[in-house]
Image 1: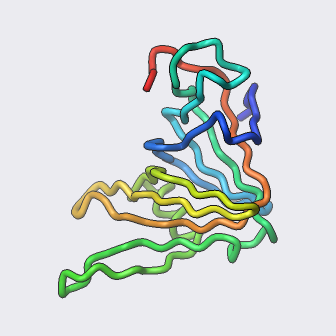
Image 2: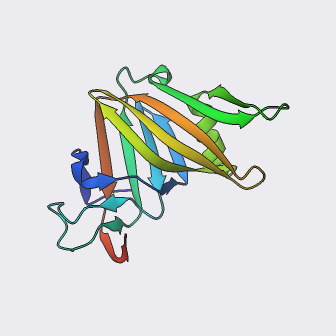
Length: 157
């Protein structure tokens, strides 16, 4: 799909509470697609609105540092038989397959960015119990691009 906007400057964009329903890893890029878009600040040069609003269908794409799957670490937190929370490492392909086959959606909560790396706190939204699982993605990516076509003024924060 072609998009009319592409932004590399994250200061006016937010993925907070945005849900990815499709994902891919190809040609050294990790991407997530959002049917309900992501947030754009009223200070963004493309916005003439007074509120933080959602975009239409959009995607975020991380250009991985070495272009390899080891540039991404995914931890999913689960309860074991003794009701203790344990951290399970997933491959990026496991996460992508889980999202693309409809077993879960990935809700972005918080991102912490430092130079070429970021930590993304997120939550897997599942169709069955436990319905939600916390997760963390650590991504080594010198470039992140946000793609969208239009702003939805009917969807303010």
